[in-house]
Structure formats: structure tokens, C-alpha cells
Length: 325
Image (cartoon, rainbow, N blue to C red; front, side):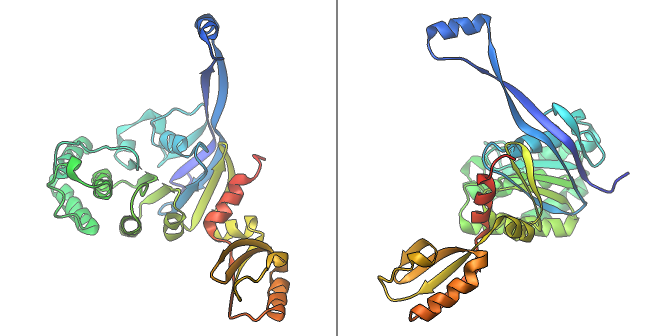
């Protein structure tokens, strides 16, 4: 048997969406003859994830990321193909399987709104059958790691969004899952709270060796946590590899930022991205970067010049903009 924790083999999920034209006549006709449109949310994707990996799962809205995570956690049945997590078929929802995974969705509340988080933690302990001594040790360690000792006795409804997200993650980890699915865990949080949650996830991974799949629209999350990224678009797999490989494959430009006298026109040297107080940012093909830099230094009195790779989030936008093929 493979040592992979997660295995996907041509996993697919298809929905049939009812559709009709507008108007009363069309509404009445649809009662008798219903038209459906086939939507492939996930289209035959395959990959494997090894124990202890933290993998970024990227794609635009509607790409199929959340659908995939729901199939991996057993909330949805696949239409075709197969997924195995820790050797289990997730859709069977076996108790031994559920005790070893956790799914955290940044836009969903799992804790009880009107009671303190401590009570919800205790409820989760009972659900997963965690021995009390083990539960107390894990709970207290997680509370310390998250630095929320002064918050756990407040009703969840009285907590801020960032504080609630911390409690949600602690609640999901009470049974010390071996596989953690994180779907936009930092959505809506301020920069400081995002940084703290990223550190917590990294610390938890190092402490327990848990395997993590992370979806996020914040590239800072992915850059800080993930050595490997998987990119899907229109439900299909576009890329699987390191962030460095992703940039090398899809980024064919360099960014040149140069400080010159205000009003200097550098448009003929490349695509002008921005101009601010004499600092001009240009986007030029990689193959032309050295030559363009030399020309600018020769033609103008330059007080500062830097050449950088395109930011990762801009590279990701280029990936998403490509055709489905």
C-alpha cells in the first residue's frame, strides 16, 4: 500500500443545474419539461499528498476547491473516480476515519453561538470520545498556542471574527486529527490576525506531523506555509509543484522599478505599471530585462533601480487567465 495520506484518482463531481427562460409561460412549461445543464465542478483530477505535507490548493472562485475538500472529508459523494484519505473511502463516513480528520471553513460557524467556547470543546471531546486527561492536555496546549486564555469563557457570539476563528480551529483540533482541511481560514481577518493564524498552523504541523491542505485567496498564507501548490481551474488540474516552479513556468516577465526625475517618460522601455513621485514601475519580458536595464541606466540619470520577479499573486492571476486547455 502507498505511503500517501491522500490519493485522488480521476476524482470528479458533476451537478445537473435546472435552467429555464424568463416569464410565466416558461415557468409553467418547466413544470412539465425540465431542462438541466451539466456542470463539472471537479473534472477528473489526480494527485497524491504525503504525510506531514502542507499543500496550497489554489484556484479562482468556482474552480472546484471547496467541492474537492468536501469530497475528501466525506460530505459529498464523487460522481466518478476515487479518493482515499488515510486508506479510507471518505464517502463511507466511517467512525475511525472521522476521528482522524478535520475540516475548517472560514465562512462557516461550527461552535455553538450562545455558550462559551470551553463548553463546545467539551462537546467535541464527547463526540470524538477523547479521554478526559488527553483532552485537557490538548485543549490547554492549543489555548496557549493561540493565546486565548482570557477568551474561552466568553459566549462565542461576543467574540470578534478573528477570535471566533481561533476558537473554531481549536475546536476542530481537540481530537488531534492527522489530516486537516483548511478552507479560507483567514478570510476577513486583519493582517495581524492572519499572521498569528499562519504561525499557529505552522506550529501545529511541526508539533503533530499533521497533513494539511489549505485553500486561500491570500497568497501570504500560501507563501508562508506551503512548499507545494496544486492549482485547479474549471475543475481541472493545471499545476502541481513548488511555488518556485510555478513562477518559473508561468511568469515570463520581470518588474523594473526605477527612480528618475519626475515627468520622465519610460513608456518605450516597457509596460508602465505605476508612476509615483518619480518612481516608475515597468513590466518587461524576462529575455529583455538585462538589455532594458542597461538602456535605462545609459539614457537617464537614475538614483535607484531594482529588478524583481513578478509577485506570486500576479503570477497566479496569469495562470487563472489562461485557457482551460
